Length: 395
Image 1 (cartoon, rainbow, N blue to C red):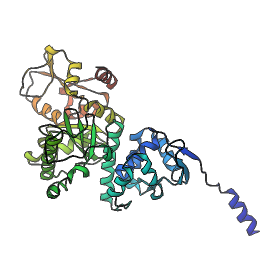
Image 2 (cartoon, helix red, strand yellow):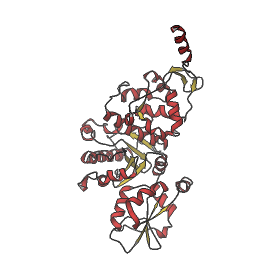
Image 3 (cartoon, rainbow, N blue to C red):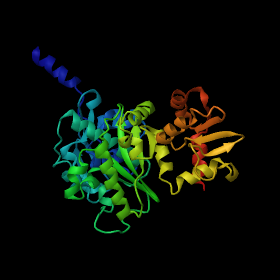
Image 4 (tube, rainbow, N blue to C red):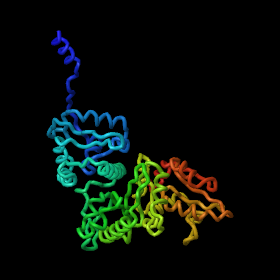
């Protein structure tokens, strides 16, 4: 009787489903393979950055089981588990299975060698701090990847500090912090303890990149001042730029990003918006990806202002406060670049100017936090992102 019951139970167990999967370039699986080849691991809660969260999670779950997979039609077939998911709550993470690493040898030249070097032959420290740091780095890479920045270290020219020559690409690119923080041994001790996760280059500029995620960042003032100086030297020698005075601040909540600036240091000389004059908030979602595509256009600031305002409305010279145009006696600020540092200076400037009217142009997703931060003294005028994208990308 027991044997019959055991036989029935075994018959109820579904056999392991194995299907041949061909990974197409640009597919969700291909994107995740590329991302993990550089980031090492990625938070499951942020898979939505790559597209349809429900579909991606189902694919990851499917590829936690043994499948036959290949990266090209006619290419070698691997019978492996591709992904592994581990951890709880905010530490829940996606990594590659060790048996799937041969896929990286085919993914793009140098991918496997870089991965093994960066992640100690597929060894990951299990502490919460290491996981969270990797997650901050991974989310920034994902935003850069989805915004079409070249982020693969093996496809990027190595930054050097021995001479002045143009080495960076002519198109937007993203360097991970570990690949530029330690390019000189003597500088390692000066730049290792910083919160920077990367640097984004584009024609005519460079951003330091930070990711505060869902909590106010603990700002390492002197360390960040040193990394800004170090980055400034690298851009002078590799991109022909004078300095790095702009940063991208990735965060899941705009008020957390604002608090990160305002609470970064009680000494004004080391406050975040003193070290970086322009701090662009990038939400960790599809709107952030679209915004980054705009912010890496050549001469993007002038293009935005030209699309918004007639030349006769634009102020000449530098006034006592931040604004971009005067229309009908109203001082207008464009917040379409999501620059929180400039927004802070704008609010500080209009407090005592009760004789003037003020207006801020913004995207619909910015309206709530601007209303909370600026109050009723400023009129908000929204513009759909599609309208600006059409104007900029059709120029």
